[in-house]
Structures are given as structure tokens and as C-alpha cells.
Image (cartoon, rainbow, N blue to C red):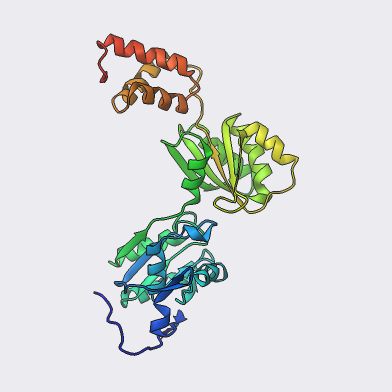
Length: 323
């Protein structure tokens, strides 16, 4: 049900924030142009926000943030900078790891009463490495409408710019801070046949890279920092070389995204195993694309893969479908 717009400006007060005058609060500004935000239906709105460059936000996100009754965020000071940049006056309320247990029931209550609540993270897509998923889960259980507004994601941005195989990947968030737990987690990740994507803080980067190199070997790796910002940087190499470089460098700033190539095939990989992978790939892709996919997921030389693909095709009369 859509909310009716009052004929005259009113103030809305609640235990979770104070609403500014209706006419002012439901507008936003882009480069000095004031725009009206369409009213929202009641429900929870999961809104992706920029990971660095404020210009990456979508118009739909701005409309939703301006029209919402309340915005739940990790850090109100950080989120206020984004809202101020677009002259949005919607009240903010903190929702993070340390207060989620007490804040979540109150947010669910507001939603059940018919409010439109937007959920954002400090940067990127909410519910990724933050407590937002618990709020979304409880909203689902309560029968509350949930809408997602896709947008920036540090995970996908790093994967895209890394130049590392992107057809299969695993995002594993932050590694444990303690070395023993970190090494155990790396060991568990070592055999996963996919590109790995991790978050890491600047103070722990050198130690994490050293443990990753010890546990995963000299895999192709990209360290992505300051993504979408003025000093965006992508450091490429293998884990061993990057670990050595970072050990001797001054500490970087900010949070990093580490993208690590899949593991090479085990030494005992047989021709039959390679043929099985090729048959599966050739069912979906052209010969060239199949060769590229298998090469990206393994350490088998492209020439070897290409020759096996030609042999399989010849054995089936040159047909493109050899499954």
C-alpha cells in the first residue's frame, strides 16, 4: 500500500530518528538540481552505495534514500557524508555488529507498522560482510516486503579489474586475525577449484600474504586498493613475490581486496580427466572458449589443451558438440 502524502509539511518522530519536514526530506540534489523522490511502498530496501567514488550511486538509489522513512547504516557519520553530497535529509540510525541484537527488533517493528526502511553498508552492497543478512532474514520471516537495489560491489569490481579468471569464484570475506586460525582457514581454501576473493586490512596485509603464499603456493594474485578512487591501484604478481614486496614496503592505507587464481591441477591429472573437462566445456562453448576456460582453471599448457580438444573433435567427426 502506498503512503498518502500530507497536504502540509509535517514532522515524523520516532524512537529511531526524527523526520524533517516532508517536502524537504523527500527530495535529493544532483549537481545543484533539486529533484523530487517518488513515494515508496512499505518495506525493507537493500541499497548499494559507492565503494569510493560518490558518482557511482544510481538515481534509483538516491530516490529510495530520499523517500525512505529511515536509513539503517553501519556508521552514521560516514553515511551522512554520502547523503550530504546529494542533499538527502532522511534520518539515520546505526545498525552494525555491536548493536544489531537490540536494534533489529526495533527495525522490524517499524517495518511491520508500515515504514519504508533503507539498509546500507559503509560502502558497496549491504549484506556482504555485515550483519544485514540477519535483518533481511527476519523481515522475510515476518512477511515484510524486501526490495534490492543493486550497484557497486568491491568484490565484483576487484574481480573485474584483476585480470584473473572470473567464471568461477569464491568470496570468503576477511581471514581470521590470529595466525593459527588464519593458516587453518587458508588450508581449507587451498583445494577449492575457483578464484578466491578476500578482504584484508592494511595492518594485517603483509602477514596475510605471507601465510597465503605458504599455504597456497605461487599463485597468480592481484591486490586491489582504493578502487574507484583517485589513487586506485592494482598490484599484480604471484603470492610469493607480493608477500616479499609488501613485507619490505611501508604500510598501505585502507582495506584491500585480494584476488587469487585457482589452484593448478594435481600432478596426477590424467588425460581422461582433461578430456572430461573439455567435453563439459565444449558442450557450452566454442573450441577457443573451451580451451581458454580450462587453461584459466588449470596449469595445463594451452597448447596441450588445444591439441586434446582437436583430437576429441576429430574423433567425433569434427562436430562441435562432442558430449
